[in-house]
Image 1 (tube, rainbow, N blue to C red):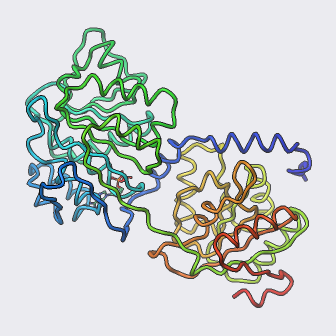
Image 2 (image 1 turned 45 degrees about the horizontal axis):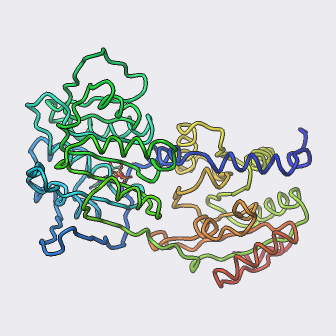
Image 3 (image 1 turned 90 degrees about the vertical axis):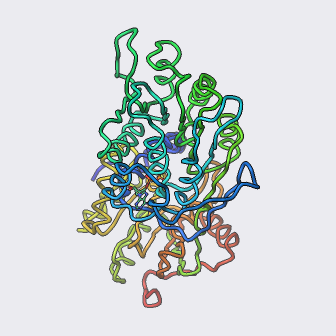
Length: 453
Ligand code: ADP
């Protein structure tokens, strides 16, 4: 047997690893979400709309026909399998498509700041807006979209190409690293998508793009954007090059203060659309804890639980990559089919692991929290906290706890959560979590598991 995981590592090493994992890019998470998502997230929550001019009528549409799209675009939308606008699209599309886009200089067009969780149709919405506003007969960039990373830009580019399938006169250029053009060249494509640094170079230094001719500016994934030093400044510098009557659109999955402050610098006079995240609840979850003395005992307890109940699929959360790797190894030695999601894997590999797990090819998914953040696997009925979620300071991370085991109205099925406790310290964490949610976490005796089912 290999050198046992924890025994050799100094606590500070573990801490550093954790930090590293924590820092793991928001961009990677966002890309992962896109790779594994093939459908709209349905939310039952209402959209909140704040109009720039509260007196103007509020339009929302229930069908794509009502938008009077170009026939080529309507065809593209239907070919993608969209039947009707998503919640956020119902309000955002009429606002973004409101004519005229090019308003007289001095006044600003319908600018928009929109926030909703990933998978609710934001990308499709602004892609449709860009394609609608383009004049295909003019051979210069008219719509500019910036994304936080190369990979995310490519992903959005794919959506533009797909939605524009029946509108081949409209062309797309990628302003991303590695895409070298000859000096003095002028870009003829009507839509340009890229990362902030390259876009800024193309507009200012290299002048491949005349920013004064841009009519629609999209800033996607604002929350990811501001997480990277420099992107924020570059975005603002790009925005300053654009004409005043250019339509500014900004999208974000979350909306903390820092995002909001940034959004207001980018988008003057905005309309605001927000779609709240669906609340998660512990109401339909049976919560237990198991007392152990060490990691090995936790493992034994886990095997007992596994043997005692019929588990469709389970997710097991560990604090570090190291523990996750160790546990996955032990479980597969016991003959379980285990999938491991770990921080050192490429995003594409992670997406493949999640896809396999969703398809039921493995019954157990072992993961660290960072890797699994924001991933819904609907059929999972058992969640095991091999380590309790704590934040950097070692305090209970209630939000992560709720997100790991909580359910939204949609997946209202009953679930089971088991927490492994292996020290006074972790017992204290558990008690604090219990107090926070004011819901009893019952003790489970793993030698007698009759009560659990
Ligand atoms: P977001 O940008 O908010 O993450 P996307 O625009 O990428 O969301 O949409 C998420 C998924 O839903 C994508 O697979 C997309 O093709 C699909 N989708 C978007 N709008 C619709 C719609 N109106 N009807 C059906 N599917 C849609």
